[in-house]
Every structure is written in structure tokens, then in C-alpha cells.
Length: 511
Image (cartoon, rainbow, N blue to C red):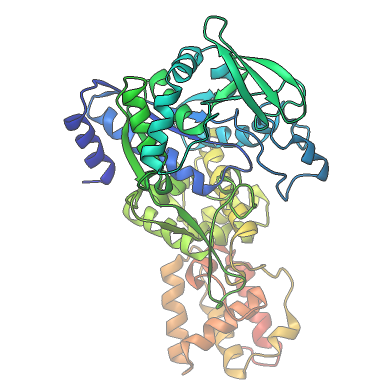
């Protein structure tokens, strides 16, 4: 049984709720990356498993847009030093294309969720606070300040300052949420009074004038949104960590049961500086820029594959994500064992084969359709079918451009590579001449495979040497994609002419 179904059954058996809310979220401090994606895909898998059991459930995503910019990250201009400490929802977009810093990094991710076909309700933390949903839990936090402080000390083992409060006000002078200290509050007026490091004394409304501190905010959010299930990174699940304090605050302060926890291991980025070199494994980070943004990877990898990469591994196991050859192997596995990618004829064409076809087509869709037909696939030509082919071909082209190792890239030589053919032996040229004589229209990959072995045997040469000659004649390099697939994709007259040219270039025409 898949791990998501095991978790769903355990939730139904152990929880008293009949309706479930699966919560996920992230702070959009930088590009939301593949590592961040694990949380929402785990949530989506459990949500789907619950729905399959006819359980009333929904998946939500909370963007922590009311968190501060903690420092000027390397990808930000120097003048963003003045924005440090302000909430992400109020900071301008560094590139000027969205309403705020938060939206700049959040919106591409939300667009990616649509491509991933994840059904989710989106909440923005700044809107939740500004709408007044937090007012009652802020009041309760102030009234129970000492109790919360005691819980934090008991669970985390750290000494809380005597002037600690559960609320971070936003200074109405400098705009920071990190530099003001609460000096008092009025429950009836629903406001807090503060002194800021900038010298300003002001009043912060409970409705959008500040936010609860992290560990209190998390517990309060569970109650406000009715959260019953939540996946989160394993660091939050450490003894004395934020989930342990959240459980105590939820039950003792807000009279609410903490959600069913699904702690998960992280996704590490595995990259190589060159083929044959040892891969480097790094932790992904939005702020440091060591990541692959979700909106970038969904342009190069079919969404179903990206979900498969994550759901195939149990949450308590870490994932090493390598977008190059290892990802292609996973695509092979997915198409072989689960289902083809795309509807209609697009789903019939293996992704690996499509990598060959799009390189032959050189970006020309009409040529791609001809090449697909020569490969033995029937294209009916309706708009939906053509769009599916175009979409899958786009993934293949983007993956080749962005992540493919050099060994998978080639350029079909439209002109005879004369200089390279001089490197071939007399026997190789003779074998190419023999191939030219045996070419028939409509040969498929298996036909070509058998012919290559027959010619190699007849000319008493190593099959490897004939493959090298074929690649050199067509690609100007000694290796390439599977020869059968490549040759079946090309026009028979083009191949006949090319191999004959190779054979006669040194006076070795077949007789």
C-alpha cells in the first residue's frame, strides 16, 4: 500500500474529526524551489488518499507573506538594505513586475501548482491578519502571555525575557516588524502600544498592525483555519522544537487539538560540473539561490514526473534531486511502469525518443510532425493532439537546453562532414556503402538495428565501429542516441545519399 494511503487510514482511525484540512505553506523570501515543493505534494497525496476513502477533506496553502525580510539576500540590489525588517507583502517587487516582493516569488509558484494539477485553497498571511481573523487569538495570547512564556521555557529549555510578548508590532514610522517592543496593550480597543528602535512611539491595531511570534502564530493558525493535518520539515519536529511548543500552545491556550503531523526529510540538489565528475550534493535555499525554482523545472519536466519524483519516496526518506541523467532514468521508469506522458500519440512517444526527434527537427514543428510520422506514429492532426505533441516537445527542448549532459545533445549535419569522414577506416566506409544499398522506405528501429548487425557481420568488423561511422556521418561525433531510433526518424533518401557520400569520399563505393 502506498505511504499516502497508510497515513490516510491512520488519520481516519486515530482522529475524531470527520472533516479534514491539510495545511501546507512557505515564506516567499526568494524563489520557491523543488525542495519547498515536497511539502505541498505530500499534502496533496494525503489529501487525495483521504478523498479516495470518501473522507471530506481539503488542501490549503498558506503563504507567509507577513514575515519580514531578514537580510539583503545576494540576489537583491544594495538599496534593499533599507527594506530589511519590513514584511514581504509591503516591500516593492525587486523587478517591478508584481505588486510586492511576496507576489514576485509567490505567483510563479502558484502558476506552477495549476500545471501540477494540485487542487488547493490559497491564503496569504497578510490578508488573514488584515481581515481581522487573528484578532481573537491575539487577544487570548496577550491575556495568557505568562502561560505561553512558561510553555516556551518548558518545551524549548530557553529563558524567556521578562518583557517578552507574543506580538510583533509594525512600526508606522519605519515600517519594520522586527524593531519595535510592546509596552502595553488594550484588549477592548484591540491595539498594542510600542516603542521602536527608530525612536517612534506608536499604536498597532490587532487587525493587521502586527503579527504573532512564530511559534504562537503557528498554533493560532491551526485553530483559525481548522487545520487537522500538516506536513512539515523534520527540523520543526525536533524535540523541543516548534511543533512541540505548538502542540502545547494549541491545547493549553487555544483549546484546540494539534494537527496530525507528517514530518519529512529534505530534498537535496545533486549536480555535476561535468560528465564523469563526482556529483555535489547541496541543501536547497531560496535566500542563497542554491536551488531549482519550481516555475523553472515545470517548463522542462512534465508535471506528472515532478510529482512522481516526490511521491515515490516515503516522507521520512531524503531525496537527492539531480535534474540531468538520473531524472531522465526516472522518466523512463515512469513511462515504462506507469503511463505515457501526454494524451493521444504524445503519450505513445517515449520522452527519451522525443529528445532525439526534437533535435532532428531543430525547432520546426512541421518537421517534427514529419519525423514523428517516419518513426511509425500515426498523427490524425486534430488541434488537441497537436497541442499535446507541442507541449511534450516543449518539455523535451527545455530539458535539453537546461539540464541535459553534452552526451545527449547532437546536431544533425545537413551537409556532408567531409573532414570528419576522413577519420573513418576503409572498412567503415565500405560498411556505410553496404548500408546505403540495403535501405528501404519505412524501416523501423528494429529493422535498422538488425541491418546494422547484419552488415557488421558481413564486413567482418566490430559492430561498435559501424555505429561510430554512422554517428560520424550524420552527427559529426562518434556517439549519439540509439541508432535504430535515430535512423528510423530520418528520411530514407537522405540516409542513402549520406552513406553513399561517405563511402565514395575515399573511393570505397560498395559494389
